[in-house]
Image 1 (cartoon, rainbow, N blue to C red):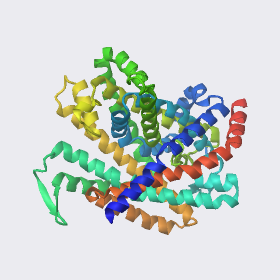
Image 2 (spheres, rainbow, N blue to C red):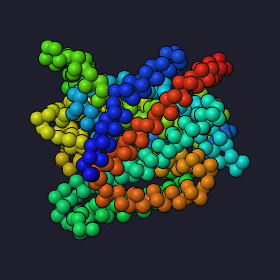
Image 3 (tube, rainbow, N blue to C red):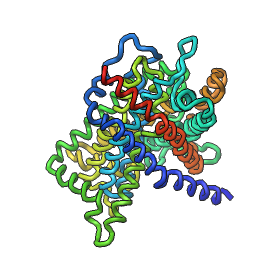
Image 4 (cartoon, rainbow, N blue to C red):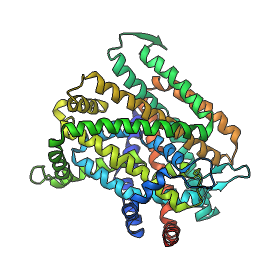
Length: 467
């Protein structure tokens, strides 16, 4: 019975995250890029400047930078380390090319999401702000579309509680710690008849305490932690990638050539070019979207809380998230993997093992334990901040669903903390598949709203830059 349910869920997941959704998200990104005249390229420098230059006297709960870090806390995660490896192993080096292309168009989508989030956000009498796709659907498209906003919010709660925010991240953290400190489960304890490493148990307890201490403080505490942890860990990870690339600088041109040739199936045997290209495109685009969440509607929930009076300005800040997440971090991870040949099928490596191999071989002048430890540390903190980010997203979705009932939200926080606590012991793949489905389904109401409101986006953008 469970096997049948598992297969049904897997088929639904494959359909939801199949070509139709991937093509839809990319098409919307291309449409917005054309309508906004390549804004993400023309105004990238201004966007990066606004990212670190907070607006004076803006309305909101947190600074623009803090809002961006909250969004980045949810997007920069295991996808940047494990997801890139998975895409390249499945689609070859060419997958990295399509990941970058998806991110380039995705920046236009992210810009639109950030703009609409501020334009149509709801500000309560106490200054409390709530915004995101549910409010730009309701306030932008009209009250008659409130049912669509509710659907988005429902899926958002499901994603946060059932997996992407809790189980998958917690499991990833505990597995990374165990893999470094106790790979052979030498020190174990029996829980509910199952043997678990003490490394897993201790990690679970410490993680639950840390998550609890942060999320009970709400958006201000989440953002304050995120704007310290996210930049620090991102810089540390990028620094090690840069060192690896500099040490192997002579191999970079060949790696770039391999990526471009793989993207168009030029290395495939005669007759297999198109097939190789489609596989590389599908894996790269899907994994890129999964990593930076452009079009899924999660980032605008954080953007709505930013202290700003200019929707366009916050849209520019929001789009830098995709630039940092995919075009910078994922590209560096991918090049490290391609240069060292860690993706080679003959090595039979999977997931984090691929990236670990790349770091250890690319930084061969260091003892193998050092790159492995740095990678574990980055995985732990990236996943930790993802837990925080998705708690905030799912809380805001629940607040909208319950008509602003904060008592329900407070109860939900404790349920979320409980989910983190049991996360290390959850190995039911069906739970993760359900969360994955919810994540994909979140995108549909959001994309409908962005396309319908694209006229508002274009108008606001034109007015801002004319000023």
